[in-house]
Picture 1 (cartoon, rainbow, N blue to C red):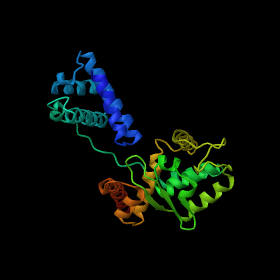
Picture 2 (cartoon, rainbow, N blue to C red):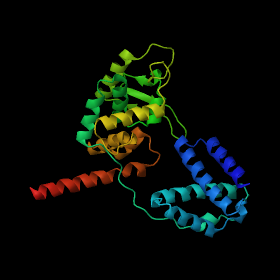
Picture 3 (cartoon, rainbow, N blue to C red):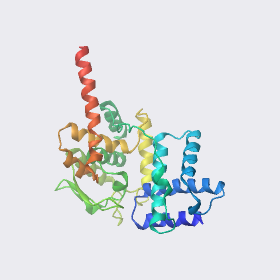
Picture 4 (cartoon, rainbow, N blue to C red):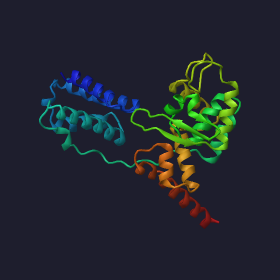
Length: 285
């Protein structure tokens, strides 16, 4: 019974238009907990009590999951049991009694000036990947948005691109600076001639998929000697650079498509850390 409810919940997430990453994380977290319950011979959610969640937390701690991972998993379970409660499958929601572990969010990772230059230099001869990395660095768009970009979404005369609505994210217009425009023009010269409207293509004229773009960027991180970096750090770097340049918080939030201003505000701690580091250097001089 619990397995079928898990599948129903996953379908409900799909129907609600959740982002693919959220869908995968939530469904996997719920599946893991359902397997834990089955080992305890509990297949009916009505049998689940608060102690089951506490025991599950202890098991995750033994398996060396971080506090952040455990907190995320419990959030997934809260969503699942809220779904069961809303569907009248359970009368009480036992997960509401669970205290989640406290953890401190680490500041977003941004590329240093040296890393920034190294990445752009190492990728320069690959005109397609150079355009991809430039767009991510100069616009802060998500990699999934870049992969879905169509020719008609790009307006070089207006120096802007239109990003279509995607999953739970609204559509928006993003400005292009000179570096981004130059990279787009350069790639356009070698882009395969085809009826396919997706802008970034493989050599076989098929859309360049997210997983392949991610793998290519990871390879260039390695070639550039950039350690512990992820594709999303290019987006982090754009946001940080805009705030450092004095672009208003609200404007940056709209450009990158944050739903909440508080998400953009997280990056202010990076500026505070940079200021603190500068103050220390001045005192040392």
